[in-house]
Image (cartoon, rainbow, N blue to C red; front, side, top):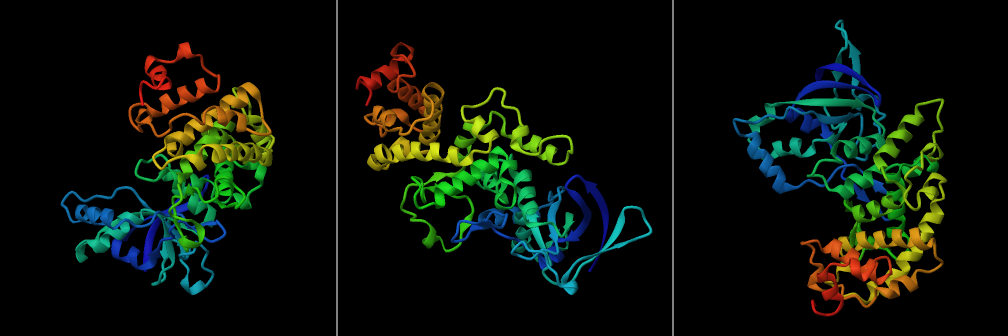
Length: 397
């Protein structure tokens, strides 16, 4: 198959804009679902296909209003493992034409490309009438795009879109941390790295407690599905609040510095003005020290709170985790780093975390935060609203 394409050059690299019939693209492409292996390594970059969503899109495809104006991202010469295809007979080739910026893409008649973004739009054609596969799709085609950039593009494009699981987008931001210098990691990457470490380290108080967005390989060997699970997003966002007041700005600054001969390319080149309480550890790349603080804190939480909590306890929910991070920040700001946090967690151990007062709707998180801050001495009783005082006095159960 031969395709006419327009070459586009952008900072990440060059790519080609072309139109390909849906049936042809289905025949020559695959996707790589994000999943974890036994060692906790993340592979792939896509969400699992949702058949219900595919059928809904197929109905739209068969309608008179059908239109997909945005491009599908295609990584040419990449197999379903995300690895570059080396066999010349199975690779895409680019040939110049007499027209400026117009090229011929010579495409082999076999699976020779990976869909980075748009797999649901494309695979929905399998649920539509067969003649719909003649519909042309706009494609942005990257040649030999390395695996980490496949994940980076997917996460960047989808990170702010509501339909994409936030945990997956955050995990993909930290996709290639093992192959990048540690002192260049953005707040997201460090937070994802620490979250994975907490989840996969057997000595961690959060071992197998964190729900990961991608599918697992051999799930039964990795996690007991009956255990309580919190989300990746809750952990990552909690950690980021301790090290950065503007994670996106930090990430952009680090990316910019990597392309500058004048600036420090590491975290030390970032400002710490308006710093969160553990910002200095992030700036100085003292990641082990940061992990140790979190580990000691959550050991106290696990031993005193989680091990004695009922299933409906708010302290086991996402809002509970968020408040626990807020409380840790208060402790660190007022009393500094501790060898043990047992004395603090003991002060809040008699709170009825199963009370309907902390319902997940109706400001439950704000109520919980006020109650715990008061119990820890970070708020005066006179600063509490009457309903909080009624709860503390047993009037509200």
